[in-house]
Length: 279
Image (cartoon, rainbow, N blue to C red; front, side):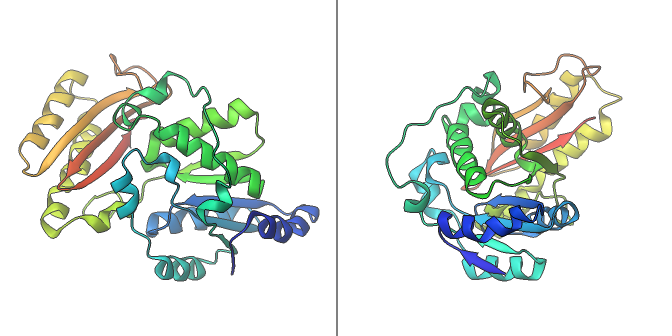
């Protein structure tokens, strides 16, 4: 496995791969890797000849400087995990490599940019699409893989790809959960033992929605799910919604296609997100 730090070195390494008409996959990450990331690597290996994983904590997508500062960066752990997973190339650039000069970025991502995460983290998805576009330009992958835990992020990246008419195929992969249901996340490392127990309300509420979706009305489902949060100390709910998976607008009828339940909550000092597909 090779570790590369510059775009020029990456392009030089990938050039003969492309000339040989071999397929390249990109798995973009911000590090602090877990089994969810490994599942993306394994899925990528099923589709392509070579897998590139990027590790880059992107400053432009953080709306709170303190959040950027405390984001976990266990690089030795990450490198070993990728080596064990059979990743071929790790692209780990410094900030100056990706942002050599000050630049303005704004593209139309549609109304879904401004709801849910977009409402609580204004400008977040502009930063996400900015760095993903840079990574796509650096790697020119045939496919790129993302986890479904960041459901809205995948939707925004799809809009960005459409905006620039890029040829990359996006594959979203199922959420990987701990044995007790908690969605794997790089931020879970920040949970205290008590917070970790309290955090289970996110997945418990989503499983309740899934298991009772055919029996209860949307209004009843949401009322009962939100009541579950009120019963757990140290958890502050930002939103819990059942929405259209394309527009992220609240669903009024269960007969609508592509419904998804989405939740965000602050557990202690750590903000977590999760979702459950209902189709």
